[in-house]
Image: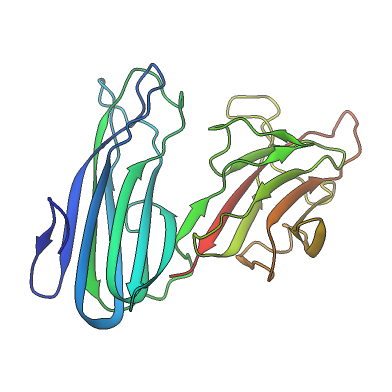
Length: 263
């Protein structure tokens, strides 16, 4: 059965609790909401997540990022999945037991004003995940630009890719269940910025490639692959390249990267 806040009912389990965003001083809350249960028999089970977004002292929604680690176990062996929690996120797996850990992963300094609480919930019931186009996903983080690490907390799915073929290299998470990627080329600048314009298809020269070590194993143009792209076997990282020629109308664009998670 689930942990201290878990509840057992007819064929279903649930757990809920409070998490906190990082403090104004940049201190991250290291607590987590945990649950564990042993199923009556090995079959498919589904975990559905809910979250009440934190609000600041003025009642405004406060930015946050929350992760769930789900470990499915059968006959002494386990597989791990790591996903972002949003309202309605669903993950399925076949197992004899499951362990769930939900924790705050909000970027340090993303908001201002202090640490704010919010509630997360996980429901576990027999059955498979509904057939919908959007899979469970995990926002990409980290990476390097020209060998220089991307500052922690500056990405969370979004990368400003420099022009001129100077690519951004992003590691594919290990032991998280990554099977696909969704890459979208968005706009340059930011809201309110006079350079905030969408990427023009007839001038943008962009591609992304999967690499296994130093060897390319797949090249794609994000304008031609707006859906989820399978991760090639052996791929270890993803490289984003904008090969525009520098000039008065050449601007770097924001690329959003999400990993598709099996389940």
